[in-house]
Length: 179
Image (cartoon, rainbow, N blue to C red; front, side, top):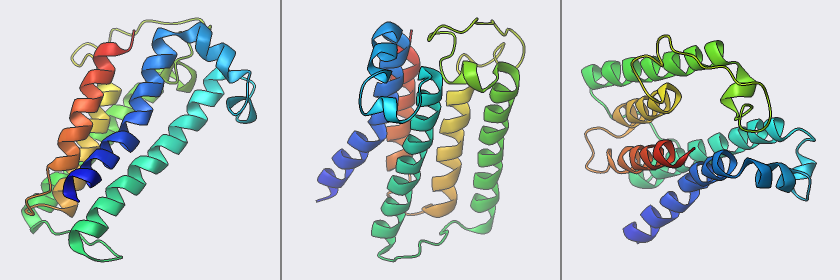
């Protein structure tokens, strides 16, 4: 049963990465696909479609995380399990991850974050921090947030690293395969 649950988590969490790989590698096909059902119901603009899918993917991600915590803790209301120091470290890691994400959004703008340059917008190249130090700062921020969340919610339980390791692997694959 555990392996089936892990496989389901991998499947659900990989949908986002697979979609972004498709958008970045095949932007013309993506634009065409956005003109057909069901994506054309989300928006006329392919960048807006990506943004709306992003929100759906994050909802799935949060749902998977909460379901993992609920099932592992045998409760409908998962509560943090970390001792105080681990919880503080976890919250600091989440804050650092969200700070990186906010920097990326501020510097690139939402259209560029959601593949605007790949989908026909005028692109701009950012060389300052955090891009000067971290190849994919938005992905790094997301991974930090995931690790921080599970450090707070599941540490020191033996399963606390399972989903963060899966997410780290998925983000690494996504970062390497996105054009």
